[in-house]
Length: 123
Image (cartoon, rainbow, N blue to C red; front, side, top):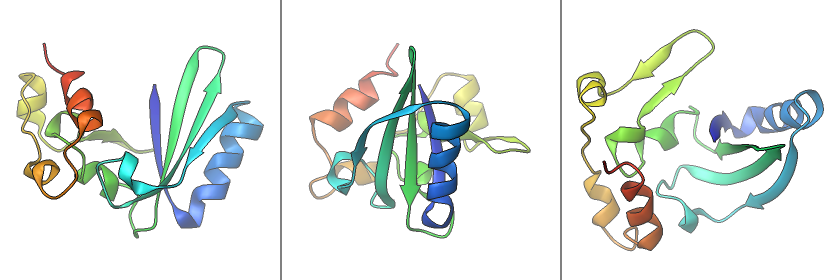
């Protein structure tokens, strides 16, 4: 499972690369934001190739990493760019620790999908 983040400006280039060059097939496009924790996500293209799955996550913000900062917990706040690997909480990541983002409990953000997403990382 691979998550790729892009801004609206580069969304078509990224999607076309995975479809044309990498030969992935788009299986679904989710356009509503309620399915995801962060309001920075405008849509998600779900792709498959053989037994590989990829989500291309599009944001209408200026930076593609903004959705990462809004996720349910620090356990998923690590990412790679073309030049580096970034771990926003390196000591916690190394020690298999995480902090749940308190924003997921505000308003209507806390739901079964969020709880199940967090539970994937419980050991």
